[in-house]
Image (tube, rainbow, N blue to C red; front, side, top):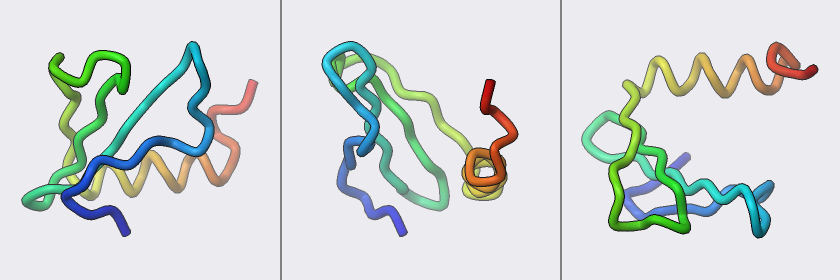
Length: 61
């Protein structure tokens, strides 16, 4: 489970860096190379659906 701290994705590298955190029932996603920039905000339900889809291979090409 995510916490209010930012967590860097284990798949991040020098060109693709993403951080996420859960806060107030929402999940925020930001570019770790632009930490002062805006973040995308999702409901916990939407985020859980996204993660389930990733695990099921829905976004594999």
